[in-house]
Image 1: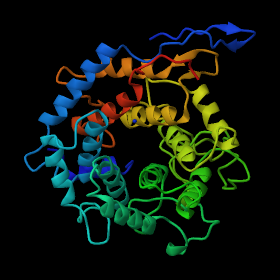
Image 2: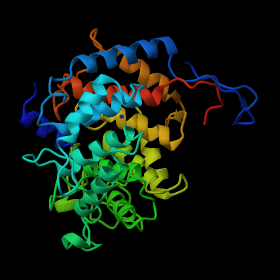
Image 3: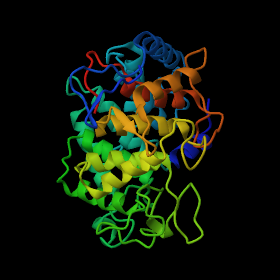
Length: 384
């Protein structure tokens, strides 16, 4: 069983060969192209991971620790995303335990912990996936309202000029960051909150300021120091990055936060034509890799894989053309990377045990959710 301190470490940080035919420099639409991983290999890896998570469930219905509802919610979500039914005994037992963390204030969290935003966001997403009969509708709405109350806005006395404005932090009055904020935005989106909602608009203000991009949307002191379009951890409270600081005081971009930024911008309603989206994708093209979480090495690698997969999936890119012109069937490449890293018992684990990625239940949940976004399509289609 993992300790609470290890779980807190996680929360503090707390996703076939392409054949292209060119005619006058453009992609031909004459022949559909198969992409994604081999289905048999995919199915085998998926089932092994599901079996591992079934077997690693604790007697009380949780995973890792009764003090870690965020991890339990991630596992539940990964299983349901990958076809495990809501009435499956593992899911039933896990949901019953998760319900124990529903608080009177609407949040869903371990009451003696300090990770109200993370845990409530992840639990909301899991309960929404299980809400087939409407039994969690009220709970989801209450959780949404709770998250709105946590968001840094005028209710916390924050002015729109404050770099913290619009972001999500660990709990009440705690400095917001991109990791908490990406979960906040996804949870709000899951709850049905539209892009024109004030909470989403405010979140986009924060997200835009966490990007290394000087624009009308970002006038922080860090905006122009690097200006590469990537994202870092937070512009709030003096700014912080996990990837180091440049000689001129710039906060270096890194992969997991850049994909988190791209995903959040899309959920918040930005289109591919927006300069913020274009610049983030340009960073991705220049820094495309699955060998590391670019900027921080192997740290947070599986968090990165999950965020990478979800961001590119909702972005609608089947093929990523990197800055050197190489075409990447990212679904195939990520799936094959995950296949190669999977343990014989079906789990994954990160040898760089930071942010709790030494916990196989957490890392397997991240990997299984990432795999879902790599799933081979039922029909072939032309790549985008």
